[in-house]
Amino acid sequence: MDVSPELAAKIATLARLRLDADKLERFAGQMGDILKYMETLAAVDTTGVEPLYGPVAHVSPTRPDEAVRTCSRDEVLHNAPETDGRFFIVPKIV
Amino acid sequence: MSHDLCSLSLTAVRDLLRSGEITATAAVTACLARIEATEPKLHAVLHLAGEAALAEAARLDAAGPDPDKRLWGVPVLVKDAICTKGLPTTCGSKILENFVPFYDATAVAGLKAAGAVILGKANMDEFAMGSSTENSAYQTTANPWDATKVPGGSSGGSAAAVSSGQCFGALGTDTGGSIRQPASFCGIVGIKPTYGRVSRYGLVAYGSSLDQIGPMTRSVEDCAAMLTAIAGHDAKDSTSAPRDVPDYEADLAAWAKQGDLKGVRLGLPDEYWGQGVDAEVLDCCRAAVDAARGLGAEVVRVSLPHTPYAVATYYIVAMAEASSNLARFDGVRYGFRDAAATDLAGLYELSRAKGFGPEVQRRIVIGTYVLSAGYYDAYYRKAAQVRRLIRQDFLDAFASCDVIVGPTSPFTAFGIAEKTEDPLQMYLSDIFTISLNLAGLPGMSIPVGLGAQSGMPVGLQLFGPAFDETRLLCTAKAVMDAVRPPMAPAGV
Image 1 (tube, each protein chain N blue to C red):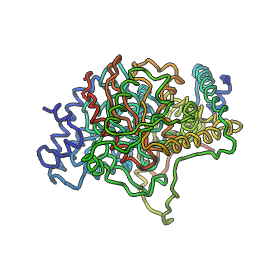
Image 2 (image 1 turned 180 degrees about the horizontal axis):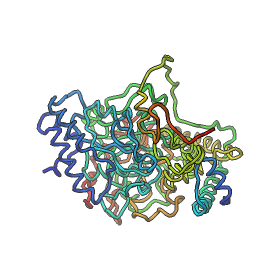
Image 3 (image 1 turned 90 degrees about the horizontal axis):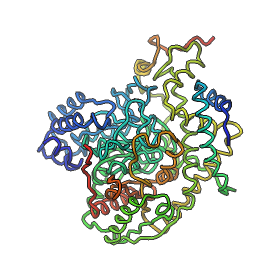
Image 4 (image 1 turned 90 degrees about the vertical axis):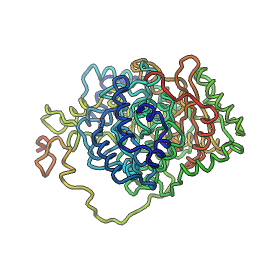
């Protein structure tokens, strides 16, 4: 299928990516090629085939539902771009 | 002297360490010297932790060799997608430039528990998205056999480092061939274990239903030793299989006393041995199959009829999962934040626009598209249905054979910058590796010689039934011992 720069821009916004016009135009062309190739799957008869979303064959083991402290607040905040020592800081929301 | 030590296999150097003939400090020092000598050409290492490695080696030496520790004193590298406590883990991306994990991935903890010494982190395509290591935000790794060529990807740093003797083994990750294809391009051994065999805890997720961590080494025995150290159930990864782990190294050694392939049926899929594969690749792989036949293996034809649909299926699934997984990089809790943002949406959009490279953005956008309302059924659900058919192809083939064999890649290592302009062409080069990840089965690549035209390494791929890594390792060893491929790269 053809992908317009406008559609590429809409999808980029859904993906929380602010891309400039040049990049959107380039991506739109490449997306069109890639999606067209992906449409070869339409030729496969999948009537009645159950989707396979992952290859796990075992039943997930369970564990007791108990709170465990796995790391400290300092460790969690250590890699954050901005904190006040207690919380992550982001631009004002309200 | 140090170069001689670096050319030994992991298990050979491990045995010297265990007997006290060399110290852990000597092993680490030799690797650091080799890294210093080769890095100006290779660019395989992203973060070198030389001082920490020497300190750890000194600590080990002070305590003395521990025969219960399978990798005691052995220097290794870890792909930068895998979390290492106190060591940067960037995933080859600017968005994680300053990220330093406060915990070890379970596979890294396994290496350390076995006595291995972490030398540093290996270069990779950004977020493991690529087949050439050219998508790293930091540097392009060269192939040790010819520095004008790519090492493959996405675990290209690990492959180049192991091939050139910078370390005795390395961890890679394989979402669609990222261990096997660079192993093939650099002339080393690599295994993608069965999905669930090795914990993914601490692996930065790309395609969660496809990703597996695995060893990359210069011999099959080395691969068995490293796999034994990292495999097993982990309560922190619900997809890791609650099954016992064999001692792969001991099982391989026990089998090697017999050493032939009598009673082993090798399945050659029609779809992997014909059109589109370079003649020099086919020649080397056919010679390896002939060698296996000489050891008593029976060769049978099999078919994996949905192979032509594997690339489309794989990229839909992988991109969809990537678009979800990479949503966590939002400039809030870790990673790059664009200071220009004045509101929260802008913070997300600008941080991700500047932090991610173009291939990652392309995959996130396409992944978002195939999951969006109105397109989900046509792309993602359809791909999941074809995925089941691809898996069924393998199950059907294993009814008439024990191990499936074919080329790892249709061609040997290509030139740096040769394929970067056309992403679809790059995706199509993964045709022989991706089906295995969709099916969740184990696969290996082993070197089987140099291409007659290119002079570059050719890899033979072996696929096995789920959790039958032992049979893969034994078959791989028999073939490699018979073929005796050259292992010393000419380019460094």
